[in-house]
Length: 288
Image 1 (cartoon, rainbow, N blue to C red):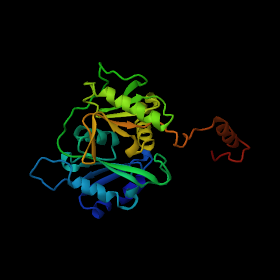
Image 2: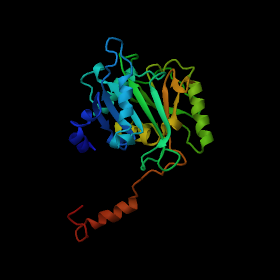
Image 3: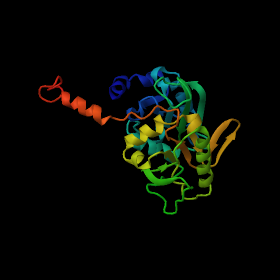
Image 4: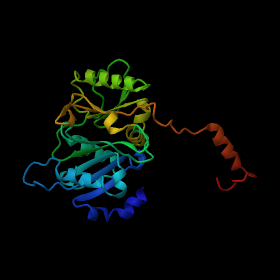
């Protein structure tokens, strides 16, 4: 993935007007997460908010391999000329400081999906989301857990993954009914919590310690185990003229679902068999 970016980097901005850079994130499975930097020039005399970058994002979703993106984040380069979408942690912090969840989430539902993405309801079926942020920062991101944080029953072990991003261990997802009930319970409970203003993104997971262990773990779990239309929720969510938004934290349900493929886990017995082939006299001696 990195080599492809190096080869194509000079050409992509020439193909889409206003696009400065894109980065399909290897750690998130490549196609599930695409980060982009665009130009916001429609009304340069007014305070910036997402306009041109939404046009650019829609163009990306119709452009070659970029059309396979599931989550597309895009920011305006004018807000930070040195922003680098290959520095994923810095990019996410820049994005979360500026995004307004009431306005900046745009879904495409029941659309085609990458064949290798199993988070939707069927083969090549799922949804996409554009999240766009432009303008000055509107919040200061929390770097540590609030001392007065409280969680509803069944939710536990909150951990800060990055500034502004909290992972919470949630009850196992056993069916569609329990999925909706659990997330609904969580978002309603958090509506009465004032201490999450600096935490614009909350991810519900099976194992919050593992999720927060590394940036790679967070990216893989969050963006491969969620379908935007099914698994994005919000504290204080609303629908206005068919536009979905939320007044407080965005909540992504990244638990394993019954329809997901099981995790690919290394089998110790198979590993030992392969290792024996690499000992002296084995068929792979000197190779592994």
